[in-house]
Picture 1 (cartoon, helix red, strand yellow):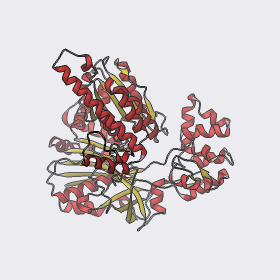
Picture 2 (cartoon, rainbow, N blue to C red):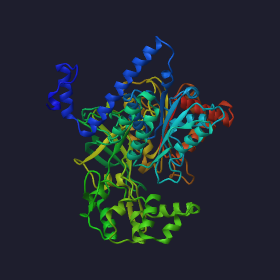
Picture 3 (tube, rainbow, N blue to C red):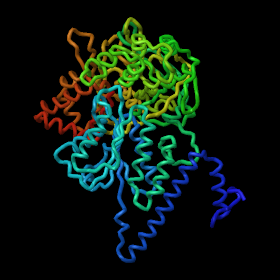
Picture 4 (cartoon, rainbow, N blue to C red):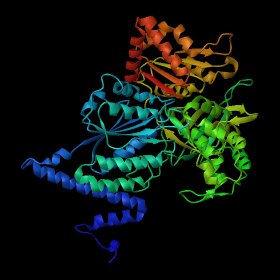
Length: 614
């Protein structure tokens, strides 16, 4: 008798029919995961029965096995959040009592009562935590943090090896929890942008350690099965559901793609309109669109020529062999050089100059070299003709999606998404260079082409209630989400006042969406607008100067309940605007600088000071 003919003990015909239908729809990996899932449920049920019996009889020690697990995440682009949801889903399937929270919303007073704690954090910029997690980091690294000798923890740190302070936010959490007396469940795991495999291994290792004793065996089986499964927020769904995300983007048709900036501008900014019709994708103002761009074929050809390799050369891979040319166009970052590539190419070529740059005391020289050399420049300067394709790709990072703030509201454009994209272009070693995604949009894609896209939600950059006033501060393409905000407010008939402070280089060529702002000013959707064009006068003038100039009005709006938004460059705009806002409280409310900083932190906690910076 075959398995499909055997009805199983105690199963009804209906139950058996469901099981048979499910079995034929599952892959081997999904079958393994489901077996672990039901094993965990079985052990959990047996354990709950045992505990219930113990409650009516003599005291039992089994209750001491019941520990709670809290999973905290700090996410800037959504990867940490996705992983945290994966871990929570698997933990629940194993019968573990689990709570999931964003560090931005977590009540730090709960920390002293936690038992098992898993922390997943990305790193923003040069070693900083994601913006929403700033208060959590301030608390845990401050004097008010409690002793945590009773706590067990493990950290998954996400980062980008392009930056010297790689995974620093996760490392800070790991160090601090140890300082507070907590014990590690499992050593910290650091992940580069290709985080899937090390993250899956961390999950498989750490979750069984959080499971009660009676669940350990099933927990290990479930975690092992999950480690072989593609990480996804829908990890536990046994039947495939058509849904578009980072791993399954939607091919969006390009409806329009034109230059916004005027003739003679010192930069190029484009307006791109994409159709999401039939995708099932939904977004809200403040969200971003992820673009799965491809490398310029000319750049790939130049790299292959320099290495004396052919595009048809075979490159092995998990999904089977593929051509080197296709892999370099679609799968790997082949422009910006990273410390990872520098290390690999030093090993391949045995070049003394490259090895010297890798020394710990050569940080400044290494950074300067990487700023001045892309992958093609290093390959040309330190040739390795005929190098094995796998030796080349071992030093290259996976090609990552590019995120752009959506410049439209679905209430205004239905099933479209609009983007505002600055074309990255410069000259290096006498050769023009372009950004991967912006270069593709500028030179290789037009109307009727398609582009793989997905929605990246941004819950920390959201409009307030329609009646609340808003102050919108941005420069350059940082104005994109504000176009979405005003489209949305116009469509919903919002009554709250709105004030836009916009900065760019030149009034004549760089006043992005000028006619739209003017129309919104006329119909009162936009209450007020102040601009700062930095190149139109002998002395440069920026949006932060406008804030200080109009400090009394800015303060009055904030006192009237206005929410403040900042979007744009993280290195210059964000800190300069932050300083200007602090100076407003100093000059208008008589606060000290420290008190002004406290006020801004309080506004951030209340979601009245939100930043989307990059």
